Length: 309
Image (tube, rainbow, N blue to C red; front, side, top):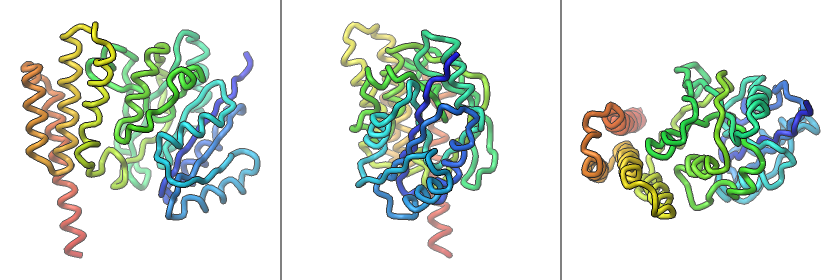
């Protein structure tokens, strides 16, 4: 079977500390028909110098581009617009891939022609790359994506070019959950297939998007995405809409909690319970509450350490 060209894009903004590892993990892939594009999105650190250095060491194997800061969504869309691949994907500039990640995901897509997206499991590692835990992705369930907001694709996921052409890529208006919103639209192009293997590392550190203190509008972005989705589908069952919206409210509550806005967090949780009182009995709600306030505690502790040093 002819190997399709795969294009991976790495958007990089002020990730000079991690970018070399990321790029080398892509260049170490055992899949020969691989195109790699790295776009420096207006960095003010050594990111662009790192990208150029790795490209020089691996001449002809990676295309590096720099631009005025445009944001992750616009940068990814630019990269995919430049791509030659029949299958596309991205790798964040602080993550890493296993050497057989692309070949395994391509095989999964080729074995399931009706599927539009392939994704695998991944490790969660700390800033130094030390193992924390294995994230085993669930089998794809569109109901879970729509109602429970369970976003299965993670590090290294690949999708057919048709997905990009039909969706237009990431929504540049989204700053907090552009990936989830994209996968939501991608699920209307075709099903997803789970490749049961660890394909890479997701790095968490103080600069990770999921750990940053976020402004109120970003904290509520997941809620706006869900509300917009259902507003475009007025015939959707009311119970499905309530369940999905309540889940989005709990996620917004977690975001406000970790950002120190206790009142707004509690209001989001209360609104979720009004929609679905049964949430009180679901462990997921309590996990969101604990995670949100625990992250705020962690930030406060770090700030106290820095101010006393």
